[in-house]
Length: 148
Image (cartoon, rainbow, N blue to C red; front, side, top):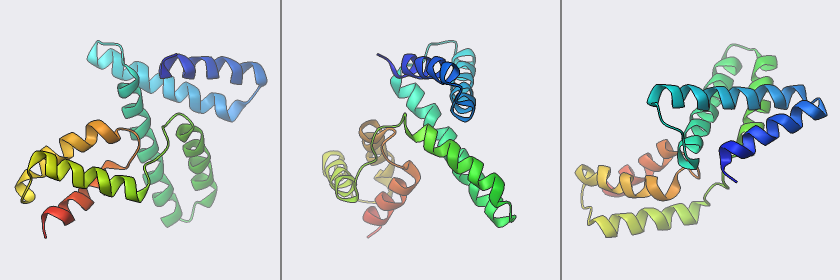
């Protein structure tokens, strides 16, 4: 079953079970997927859906940070609850050791020697770690490794 089909099924089960909070988030996910499909005029595969979910989680994390700075803990709690629901659809995050091994492997496979080769390394890692790691943090790690 594709990820999109699973999300659609979860919407139906949340509707039947009366889980209003979960239903709201699942509908937001489906709306975001549909918007990307309309914009690109192509149906998203699982990788595309994961990309949409990653973006949604990142937006909510940014919102939590802003709400906490503004002293709006009530709104931050709502965003955290949405993040929990969104993360149920994401694959398990990579452990630090796995990520370091993946970076080392990508550096040696691409023959990267300096920061100018970062694009090659990131391209390889992105294909392997899609949805399983924060690519911003991965980029910082690769930059630190190549900048030495």
